[in-house]
Image (cartoon, rainbow, N blue to C red):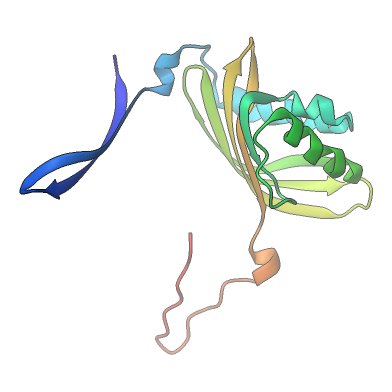
Length: 175
């Protein structure tokens, strides 16, 4: 069995001892269908089409049974069907429709992830919102579902462009 692992060692009573150990099967070995990078990118449009229905139940059903949604316009992590649906009750009032501007997919067997930048047009107002995103998809109950979804507004929209260094001054860039 191919697995990933981590160990944390501590020096205790003159000996090195394991303080923490984690081992789990590789995601690729968990089974499920393979998916191409292009198919992974296209999974966004299943979710975007669900947004177009303006039905929070339809959108929430795109998420896996153990999904986590870290939404753009809420400070509250959504970790179950009910809280994910509740988020979309309010968000869908904006009539959002998105397009992916930059996409960086990674694929495996039975899972994939897509991270990048997308932009939403809010049909209710015409406003545009550019945001960073990450999706992790899993194959559950015969279809691709969102297991993890994080979205955050581009920080420069609030902070302004990064300051240029002057006179030998160092400017720290945060990840």
